[in-house]
Image (cartoon, rainbow, N blue to C red; front, side, top):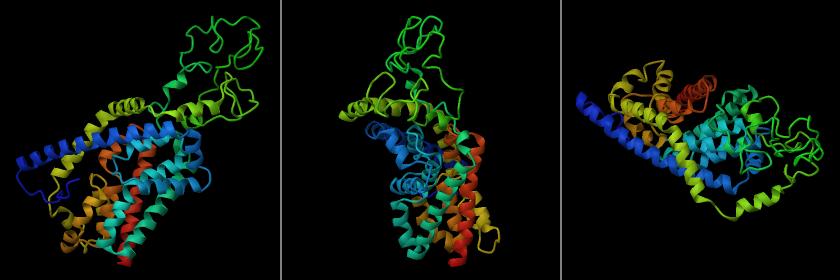
Length: 390
């Protein structure tokens, strides 16, 4: 993000031109990042089994949350470019709580942000900021999972199309006429042997008959104890049709299908494109119409509400933390307190209207509002803390 977002005092035509050029810049940047990141996530999903991701980033126990925070700390994404990685984690069945921890930490706590904080604020403020971001992200992830907010994830973007195929033949769709054919054994006789359960009677439940619909995260969880027919499997490695899961994993690890990863990334990009275009348009307008002295007037050091005001102002803006930090000196020189600056930094870096528009493609309103509230509380609380310790 161009760091001169507070320097627009020209005419209306100049501001419109600035907003248009910023839209082109933001749209090109987010498109490239989205395609590259989503394709890389596709490659990772090919190489790393979903069971491994679930084990590393599971929602049970504390290790998954720290792993997710570490992953967020290693990915220098802005609030919008972290979306494809978020989708990848959800599709890979990572725990909901750790996934939300990653969403919070990725734009706020990464090596680039820390490297810029050190010379601007010093080691003490940088350490407090890092601990604040880490603590809030982990606690928020745990609370959201404990309160069951995973039910507000939209399932349609995360479900695997392969789940619609036959349980015994992943290359063919299930027969449409259930009265004539069994989904696992086409044209099965009355006492024919089913591929999933030997000697299944004709009037028995079909091996592909599913249980009543469950929440998306429960439906996506890997089943270990039961086979596709509901019967306990003799060994975890056996598939519903006799295929070895270990052999299947060996096959997927032999070669990376770059074309498949590219197609998945392009498909995801197309599904998100309308939301991205609207998000970047709003981000460009906000960029182009923020007067240089506006923030200093409403968040001055003599204003007792400076920190909450700064946090509320920051959330609509689409500004990277690393783009805002070079302006800290000029903001402080205009009378803005350190707490207000930090509230603006956390609010604008942790959430933005463009990011929320894109997240609306994934989240329902209760989860979206809970995410915004988390960032707002973190920005206001952090601003007050920094005013005390400064």
